[in-house]
Image (tube, rainbow, N blue to C red; front, side, top):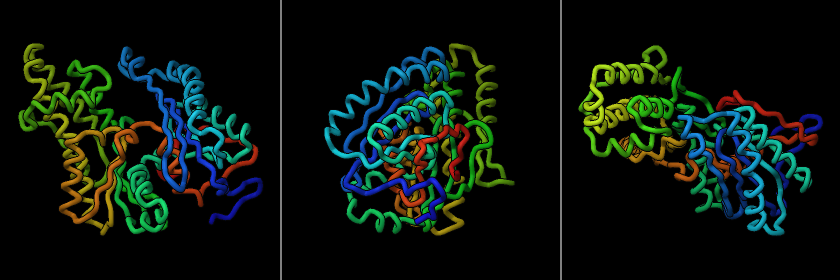
Length: 361
């Protein structure tokens, strides 16, 4: 147990109560109820994706405004499931994310904590992603989860989303260490931007995957930035530039005719780099498990490649459930439980946003 500082308390006070998760880092408003003795018993989310698709990406001011409208109905739905069950604490995304959006979620969380007179704690959104592949394991082994979880350590994780691409490890003390991260565009961002170049609407990643199913991933050559000086870092900006140059040399009709091949080849270039970096890390240390999380991890081709890599390395592979790959409150509440011994609550509820929080924060 961590040593408490003045005015700080051990945030989780086991009383048979629930952990309420609150998430609002970007354009999803989300709530969850987590019962440590069972698992997630309720999750609610309101997505703004259709609203922002018109603009080709998330508009921060618009996103924060929508949170104001969305949390009310979500809270009503949550209360119908919670009924009179006691709440032990509130866990809310503190960062990283869009400042205005984070502020909305923290305001909701503070109000709930004051209403129920329970501790409030801020959660690192990226760390929640890192632990999300173990949510299902908790549900299957809730009585002995801590023991089973520690048997999976050290763990090699790959977080791949629209805003982050991070290769990391979780050691036996449940400390997280970054092995490599992106220098520029994240993998999901590269896919979305590539899709936009090819005339595919936002978000481009899922639509590129769909188009790629009918394409040949060897039809076009795209660069793979391997960065020998920092072998586990990523860079995808050059790939996007290469696609733009390729498209500039093609007629509009040709782009349409070759779109499936372009998507397959472009997507393969992204995934090839992800797997080569992960394979390199796997060869440098003996890991007991591997995990894939983040929005891009929904891609079935990436999941298959990750599974194959784990099998060859004789390591167990774990995946975040598809509903927990994007921004969601389920992983926020779960992360609060996993890290309950290192998290502290300030009795003043003076929790502040941290938009630039890193995985190791």
